[in-house]
Structure formats: structure tokens, C-alpha cells
Image 1 (cartoon, rainbow, N blue to C red):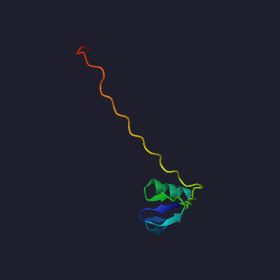
Image 2 (cartoon, helix red, strand yellow):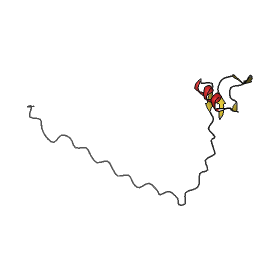
Image 3 (tube, helix red, strand yellow):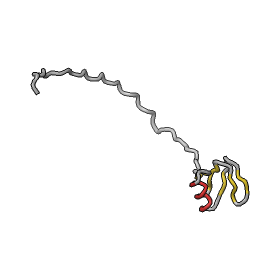
Image 4 (cartoon, helix red, strand yellow):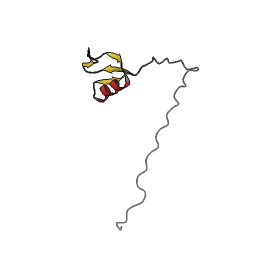
Length: 79
């Protein structure tokens, strides 16, 4: 399992500095991730964006919001 070391640690008697990326056995990697000394490395592949096949449509003319009506029923004072 490939992990990114977040704190200086000793792995199998060897010092490993923070910021390093190392390939470790599953049980050691799980222990380091669980203790907060490493993060699981996720390979971020570059995202290739393709151009749209047709140009985007122009936004349509926004309509005017409708007027809000006030109260039409007068309170009678009785509940």
C-alpha cells in the first residue's frame, strides 16, 4: 500500500521524513494511517477536458419576477 508520511517516523529501523511517499506492507500502512502518522496515497491522474461539440447557447432573457400580492382578506379580530 502506498502512503504519504505526515510525521517523521521509524519504519523497520529506518527513519522516514514527513512528506515522503513510501510503499509499505498492508499491516504497517494501516497502523500508521490509524495513528495519524500517514495518509493513504491516492493517485491523482490528470483530468483531460474535451471541448464541447457545439458552442454553449446564449442565456435566454430573464423574465421579470411577478409582483407579490399583499393580504386580500381583512382580519375580523375573532379567532
